[in-house]
Image (cartoon, rainbow, N blue to C red; front, side, top):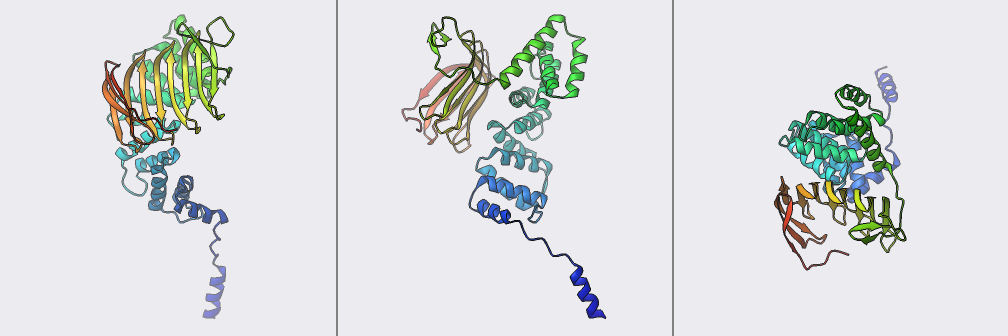
Length: 364
């Protein structure tokens, strides 16, 4: 009877399900160095999805993909370190990985980094830097970032108080379905003048259109008297323009208002990787800017105000710091993708005082 009972018990136990066929391919690709497979395997170990649930294994694969420069993996690793997944929380390292992903344009990482600066978690509290990174995320339509920008503009936190600008951000977040932003705008509007409300509504429409607008001109613009003109036109150009490299890869896109750059200018390397993006206001650099190496690694990020550089951070191709500008003062070294020095820049009060360019040509 005992033998029969044991046999019945053995038969009643469920055999573990066989791994999915694609799991073996993911594991093999991760071990071979594929960053996306490494990130996916990290997620699978975190959830116990067809592989053992293992925090250490998850962190290992996230880190491998993050070191390879994959922004989603950098963000996932940052969140895991911030939450103490698999050990004690490490807010300092988490902030570093958030920043790497943020500099590559990942909106969720930009938003998370902004909150770290806002509350001083893993970095020194800095409301100005928080506003900068919320602004970066907002450019991608991140509605919670827009909401935070509205709060900071309303309260004068890290930036001058401006009720019209605050209203603009609340309206933009409202258009994206955030009910809290709608409530905040109704409360704020009672404190605004009719002119401020009109300005907020106009700015919200313009900036929303700037985010969603597509190219409208693909012919090169002509420069006359310092202004930009469309071929065959007598009036300075207003609109959006895009241009291509000779190999057919897009090279540049820009917003133009009455012949002056106004909005975003974006450029791409001939290999298709983003090269840079700079925000302009009536022909002057005003707002955010970011640049990348041909392999996609971040080169520099910064903030301008009416043509003056306020804050910036440069990175070498290996990711090591290469100088900073704070409150308009500092030095930075810029590199070609091959690691040779391209420029050495010195700023005072936001103005470039010294630039020494290398004779080494950039990578082709």
